[in-house]
Amino acid sequence: MANAIQVDDLVVHRGGKPVLRGISCAVASGTVTGLLGPSGSGKTTLMRAIVGVQKVRSGQVTVLGLPAGSPRLRRRIGYLTQDPSIYADLTVRENARYFASLYGTGRRAADQAVVDVGLGDAAKQLVSTLSGGQHARASLACALLAEPDLLVLDEPTVGQDPVLRHDLWQQFHALAATGTTLLVSSHVMDEASRCDRLLLLRDGGLLADDTPDELRRKTDTNDLEESFLRLILALRDQPVEVA
Amino acid sequence: MSLRITLRTTGRVLNQIRHDPRTIALILLVPSLLLVLLRYIFDSQPAIFDRIGLMMLGIFPFISMFLVTSIAMLRERTTGTLERMLTTPLHKLDLLLGYGIAFAVLAALQATVATSVAYHLLDLDTEGSLGTVMGIAIGDAVLGSAVGLFTSAFATSEFQAVQFMPVVVAPQILLCGLIWPREEMIGWLQAASDVLPLTYAVDALLEVSAHTDATDQMWRDVAIVVGATVVALLLGAATLRRRSG
Image 1 (spheres, one colour):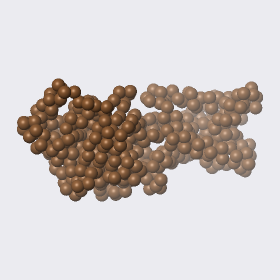
Image 2: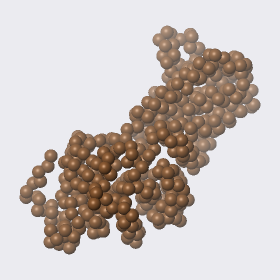
Image 3: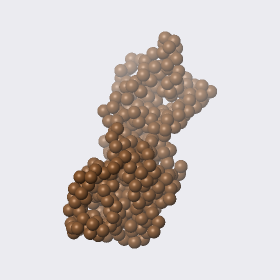
Image 4: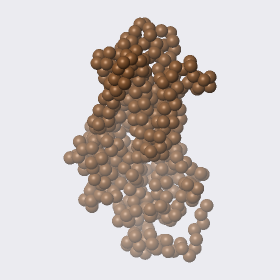
C-alpha cells in the first residue's frame, strides 16, 4: 500500500527548543493511524508540519506524493486543530456552509456533516453558546466536510461522551474504508486500540511505530497504557540517540 | 483566487456582524450623532460646519472601518481560524478582498445614514452632489479596512490593536487639513501630510464642496486613495504567513 504521509528525519524547534528531534515515520493510505503521547510530546507540532503550517528546521515531509504545504494539497487535506478553530459568532450551520464553500462541497454536504457529528439539533445555535464538547464537534464537522484524501485530526474526541466517541470512531473507520487516510492524535490510551497503527511520541522522539497487537505482544501486556510505560522504562537505562 | 470564495468570505464576515446588533448600531449611528454634535458646536458659524462636517463624512468611515477590521483580523489570528483557513483552498487575497468588500458594504450603509442626516437634517451644504460625497466616503472606508488589515499583523493582542488607532489614524487626522489648513503648516509637516492617504480622501471631499462637477484634482485624489488601498492590501497579504514557528 502506498504511503499517504512520509516523514524523513524531521527536526522542528519552537521557541528555541527542539520539539521534534529527527523523526522518521510513514502512514499508509486508507488506514487510521493513532498519534499518541503525553501533552508536550510533539504531537501537534508533527501534525502542523504535515499540514504545512509549521516552520521546520530540517528533514522532509511528503504528503500524498507532494512536499507538505504544496498549494495542490490544500484541496485534499482536512485539518482539525486542537483548539476548536471556527467562528464563535456564527451558527454551527453557517460555519459548516462557509467551510463547505471553501472546499466547493456544497450546502447539503455541510448540513450532513453537522448531523454526522451529532449537532443536528444545535445547527442554528451560535458557536459561542455551545458546550466545550459541542464546540469541538462543530470544528470537526468543518474538517470532515472537506471530503479530503487525508484527514489530520488533533484530539478530536476530547471531552466527548463515550457513546459519541464510539460513533466518531466508527465514522473514522468508515472513512478509511472508502480510502481516506486518517491521522488522529489522542492522549487517551483506550482510543489507541481502535487504530490500525500507532505512533508513540515522547519528548519529540518516536518511541514506537507498530500495530496495537504487535505493541502488546512485544511488551508482553494486554494493556496499551502499560505497554507505553514498559517501552519508556526499557529505554530509560539505554538513552535514545537523538539529533 | 476564486470569485466564489471571495464572495462567500464577504458573506461570512457580514453574517458575523449580523449576529452582533450592537456593533451594527454603533457603526450606523455614531457618525450621525457626532455630526449633530458638530452642527451645534458651530451653530453660529454654518460655513465652518459645511467644511468640518463634510471632512468628517470622510474621516468617520476611515476610523470605524480601521478599528473593526483590525480587531476582526486579529481575532482570526488569535483564535486559529486564520491558520486553518490557510490550509484550505482559500487564497490570501480571497480573504483580504472578502473582508474589504464586506466592510465596503457596511461603509455604504454608514455613509448613506451619515450623509442623509448631514444634508437633510443638519443642512450641510456643498456645491457638488451628495452621491459623490457618499462614493468618496465609501472609498475612505475601504482604505480604512485595508490599513486595518495590514496593521493588525503588528498586534498580538486586542489591547495593542486598539492602541494602533492613535498611532496610525490620529496623525493623519491632525495633518489632513481638518484642524488647520495644510498650506499654512510648517514645511516638513506639509511633506508628511503629502504622503498620508487620508489627506487625499479629505481633499477630494473639499473639491466636491467647492465645485458642482467632478474636478481633475478630485479624480487625482480618488486615484491616490484607491492606489493606497491596493498597496495596503498587498502589504496585508504579505503579512499572512502560512508557516509559523
